Image 1 (tube, rainbow, N blue to C red):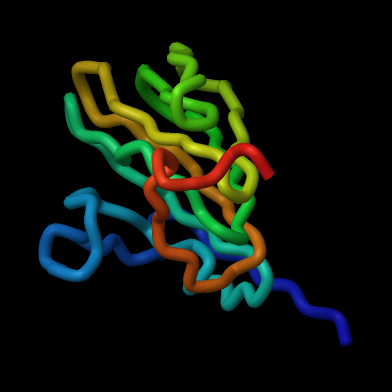
Image 2: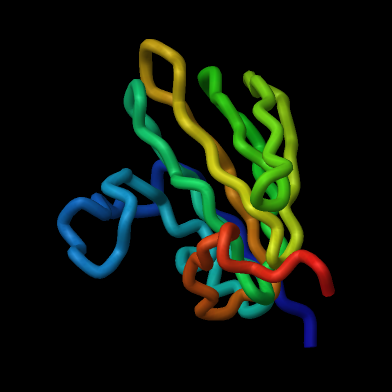
Length: 136
């Protein structure tokens, strides 16, 4: 079976996460994955105002790939106790594998936009990287 779909960003509804108590952070997203009906990969556009962030976290199964569409970000990447801080602007990609700590803060002045893709597309809530046993 061949499957494909096409959607324009403006046709993907925005969701204000501040209106959903169970889902931090309080950012606005576009669920591209829902609009396209993907089964194996999660795809979101995240919108940031100055000083908004996705806090340092990890996932048990999911590998995440990020791409800065607009704005300037400060990334926090790596295992607990070995985190590195990296500046990222438009055109920058970064990836975090399962159980790898990652987070980013928007340090620009206007609206920042990050494309985030995660696979497999499963419910994989954030873990505290400081609680992961890195000796295994």
